[in-house]
Length: 430
Image 1: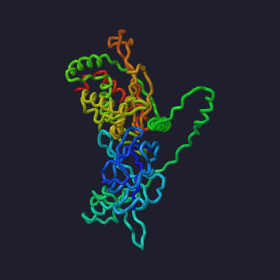
Image 2: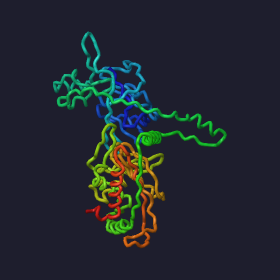
Image 3: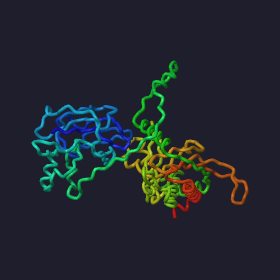
């Protein structure tokens, strides 16, 4: 029977996407794993693979289509011997499908759970198993009973991927969805009502793109559901700036120039190891305490921002962190990051000091437990160790904490560790 190809969910937050370009035409033969389309999400342009073999019988969503809901049927795949006339009218109702995806600059596999119709249907008292020709051939070679295998393809169809480890993996037990009753929220003012307020005034209406919609939804969720509290400290940078000047002079021949932000990343990563209880995320009904220090850093791009994650940042040298951060930031601005490069981590850094901001409070990036807001360093009068008035370069930072994950004393301990690391930079290399 013809197989429906659905718009995949290429990221956990994706609800719709743009079908940027088809890489195949009607009548083309494809095999499992062949690239068939380029799909633009709210974060990046991704390549979409076929999960089965067959012939592209009909393309239902054309190149350049925008706002295609996840689960929408975008094309139909025919088996050998089937014709375009065999294609029945398709239902527009979205369903979740299992898909493999790749970013344009490197592989990144994303799997989404399949929720579809049963893989069997009654016929003359017997159950019919829906499976691709390739899956039937593999099952015959391995001696596997297709009736005992759960299909992950469209409508529960059994495909090649279901058979690769079928002998070692039993049929999964059905999972019970966790449900909760959301708190009543105030009804927002409609867009039309707001527009009427400005009748007679000149303005330009700017439609929201996918990234801006996602940012709006996630930050609204964060401020409504995460109990934020804020801790503030001032950090003296004179020792760090002197050490940075010395080390940059030595690294100049290698073409490496360390920024203050590189030291902040390293100091935060080490602090998460020094205060491991703060290296945690909120997971609904439990906490996940991470072992590595995976630090996310906010990067502003046109129309929004990314938070690429530097994994194992505590184990990397300052020059490694600097090089990796430049690479991630560059590809973020081109929207070419793979999902695994901006997902995960337990801690974020948002640095607006380079833009002259003295201090600010950052919104936590869920499910992270905290985020460090970094202000600009400035010359200020201070009292030195001898009790005398002196001038020092001082930077203001604010640590926003999720009170479900980090209590006040624990947050203060984490911020103290960050301060100690930055004020004693040579110790970070020990």
